[in-house]
Image 1 (cartoon, rainbow, N blue to C red):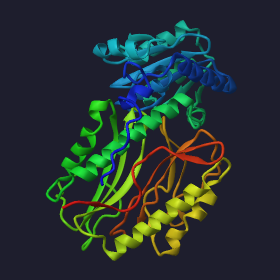
Image 2 (cartoon, rainbow, N blue to C red):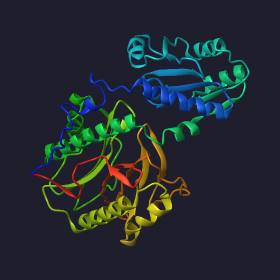
Image 3 (cartoon, one colour):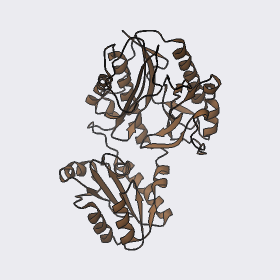
Length: 398
């Protein structure tokens, strides 16, 4: 019997808003303003510029509620309302609706408008803080006109590590929608499907519910002659065949930056080969060992030690073993012992963090691999699963 995730309400986004539009409460947005103000005070500055462009950069949405389109800049000053400068004039009306606490304006010449607003607020040569990937020309203009620039990106990352109750509600809804996408992928894929059609199955499962695509990555290869060990970031027209193994990494978001993340592996119309069976048994063991360990105070080195069942079996990994997720791709980020690319972080887990555990167990020659794992919440006493999709190596019918 195929699993269908249970609907906890008439619509998966009802837990977020009575209107169905995903917005945070005024109290949540005020909380964010307060923690940003505290970070600014600690840095010794009053003014902050938050930048995003080309639908990238979480800071603008995090502070104001506006998901960046072409370009947007927030001017934030302790004790004053925010000004949101939006690049395209026709995007201003919706920006005003989604960022009701900000003074939303057309940006015009973004850098010139930014400098004018900072001068109006009394910023002269006292310096300014920045968050986001501020363009070189804008950075130069800020330095030449306002003096020292404080990089607040590290502080911005730290204040997002611990999720509020409302953020956790968004992530639970996103996990629910991600589970729906994996069920649609499993139930709709057949020999003859293309990778493009797999993407359509995934996205078609949640668009009507208000979910948005974060990522959906696939690894599709023949078990008899394997040639791919980790999901690709860009799909191609490869056709699904009997005897393939399909590994997926799926993330559906509520809003823009609050996704679930689910990693699963399926064989297509045939039982797994011995190597696929062993790879997945090892991945399951690593996931179970890590899940049993997750709790406040646990260090990355302890998690890596718990995952050494991978190397003990003669396998390795390519993808990250653990990473933070929710409001951005966050610390701690690290790999297994055989895929440690840099020094292990020392950041301990803490209550309110949300992390993905994803043992991507592969052969050492990189020809074949599996994915399993999902998003967890770190609780006061351990961890909580946010996903309900069944674990284990799945089978796609022929």
